[in-house]
Every structure is written in structure tokens, then in C-alpha cells.
Image (cartoon, rainbow, N blue to C red):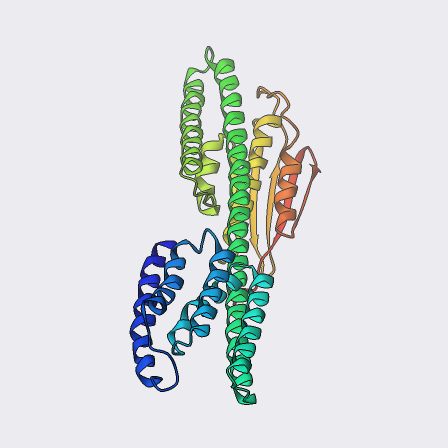
Length: 366
């Protein structure tokens, strides 16, 4: 309950205690004293304390209980005077001050019993009724407190999970951006080397290399802008590169690539992204270390796994070789495969090199 509702609650309790108190006065006119200005002031003190109870929870509850005791000692009618102390004790429990609340409740119960004994009401049923009512109030307060704490804990857990997922998504995006940058910058470097090598003797081929550089630089700038915009918005989302972009990737690689697909089936998004990036990194490695090689990309869609195999024939003698890269390409691909429970093997095959990744797939009926 928000603090801005406290004035309304105080008003409701004040009206209820005064109006219902007048009804109780008429019903108990033969056994209890009539209401006077002192009784009305006692009926209004408790509701007034609700306005400051958030700042002084224990003090306002204790004063309310004392006011209730003074009202009873004055011999005024039973009834609505118990509304405010019940609300105060209830709030004290759900606010976490359980020990103080239970001690005050025990003290109030003791006062009720002593008061009943003094005025001659020594009925066992009266003691049982008072103890049951107070116990029911406190137990209900405890239940509400437990429910609130569990809801707060669940909310905290959900917030922590959301933050964890956001961090994982940002990490994934950083990895994706690294792969895009590595691929396109390697492509730009190799094509620039090719253009410089051929610009005098074969200007047409140099022009093709420069066009590839233009396309690759435009793509990498667009990718960077997209990722940075998402990070600024504070709403990370998983990258969307998948095997449906594979033809475009091959076309822009500047390599002689043959793509073979064996079978077909829907794939989970994370498997699509991993397969795409493994092919991309493999082509980047060919561009760096074996320019001019012929490449075969083979995708085998099995019932239990997707096999991605990228094989090249090795560098040709007439192609300008790129400098060595950072050496993180194969470990990065292996990490991607392992994150999905799969495996990746890379090594020489004949004069060339082969990368083979096996990515597990769920059952098709799931």
C-alpha cells in the first residue's frame, strides 16, 4: 500500500470508529458509559497516528494500544476502538518488525485479561475469544508478510535473470561484431593487396577487387551502427545472421566457393548463427592464408546433428598472401560449437585445410 493512501485510510477509520461507536453506545447504553468529548478524542487519536506511522511505526503502534487501553478503562462501549490497533499491529508485522509486534500483541492481550478480571468478567469463553481473535490477526499478518517476501524474492530473481540474459546477449553481440569485423577487414585487406598487385597489369580485376572492398566496408559499417544503436537503446537482442544469408556471404568473399546442402530441416536460431559464423570464419581464414584456393562448403542436415564442413585446396602460387592473423579463429569456432554441446575439428587435408563442425539438433517433433 502506498503512502499516499494513508490519509484516506485514516479518514475511513476515523469515520468508522465514530459512527459505529455511536451505534455501540446505543446498544450498550445499560452496561457502558456514554461517549463524551474525551471518548471521541480517543477514537480519533488512533486514525490520526496513521498519518505518521510510516516514519514512527513502533511508537505510533504503542501509542494506539495505550489509547485503546485508556478508552476501555474509561468504561466506554466496546467495538470500533479495536479497528486501528488491529491495523497497526498488522502493518508492524508485514513491515518486518515481527518481534516488537508480537510483544505488543502479548502485552495488549494481557491487559485485556487483567481488565476483564478487574471488572468481574471472569468467563473462560471471553479469554478464549480474545486470544483466538488476536492470534488470528497475527497469523494472517505473518502469512501476508511471507507472501510479500516471496513475491519480492521472485521479482529480484527475475530482475537478476533479466540482467544476466542482457549481459549474455551483449557478450554474444560483441562476439558477433568481432567475427563480422574480422571477416570483412580480412576481406578488405586481401582485396586491397590484390588490387595493388593487379592494378597495372589487369585493371579490370583490380576494379572488381575495389568493388568488393566497397561492399565489405559498407556492410561492416552498417553492422557496427546496428549493434551500437541496440546497445544505446539498452535492449540487447540476439543477432539474426543465419544460413539464409550464406549465399550472400559466399558471393562477397571473393573466393571460388561451391556450396552443397544435403537434406533440409528447420534449425534452432542459435545453431543457425553458429553454423553461419563457422563458415564465415573459415572463409576468413582461407582469405588470409590461402587466397586463390577453391573452397567447398558442405552442410549435412541429419536427424541428430548438423555437420558443417569447409574444405579448401590450398593457396595458389599467383595469389598475394595476407599476413598472419591473430590466431583466434579456430579456438573461437571451437568455443561456438562447444557452447551448443557440439565439436569442431580443424586440420590439413592434402594440400589444403578442412574445418568440420558437428552441432547437435533437437528432435524434429519437439
